[in-house]
Image 1 (cartoon, rainbow, N blue to C red):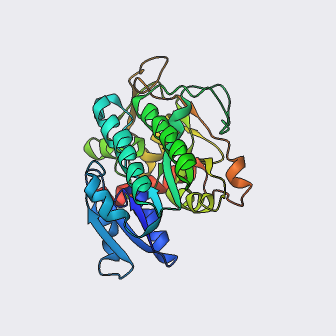
Image 2: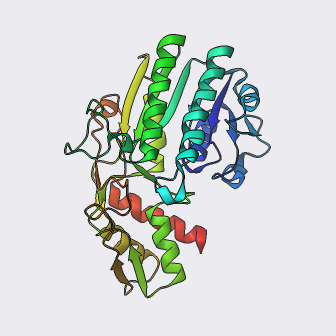
Length: 316
């Protein structure tokens, strides 16, 4: 029986595919290659335990082909952009909510899937004054359309799992970073310094403070979470600490060899946020997943440094 990974050519998805194949799984990937790259999976070309389908979750026939004979589904396909200027409301609705609904309908009508693991986001919590934030925090009031779309997907998945007898594992992820990432603050900072070594523009007031999770820790957490036997399980996955944007900027300056670059703050919006809908402070409580035996190996600062080095190498 195969394991299906939607979005498996993307950043997190491709690292998950690597681990699943190394663990002896038969892995099938469904990806439309909009934000992912087939190069992320190049090491598995010709491997008998790997199959790639270029297809779209907005096309039910593509899902039907991909899900055949699969008992486990890791749903990591989504529009990854949080900033409104990089993704429209329609993008979030179609690529996140509609795509998830289409997948759930195929699971319902075809049967056979025993577990669905879903990559949600810490953005579902919105602004909160509870740090670290536990999974039972509420009410959940996202402040971005991205966060709203992820929360909508969580609701659909929980209801389908309860009604149609499969297990659902929902992961609320911190900012996941590492090799193969192609967006986010570290990627942006490296690009800016490669374009101009004299200054680095930083969106907001620089005090935005968040948890950064190295992708290897993310994958190990995902695989630990699927051991849960509950009908619906929700797990936070993040690092044990957080770091702010100014410290990230300083790290990227050092890694790129531009220690004298001048940081220019834009001031931001809504009290120093980088953009409207940007959650300014985020740190998750991982007690639930840690009680199962998972612990992250990397803190936020080390995850940022390792990622900056990988991005410089990839873009250099």
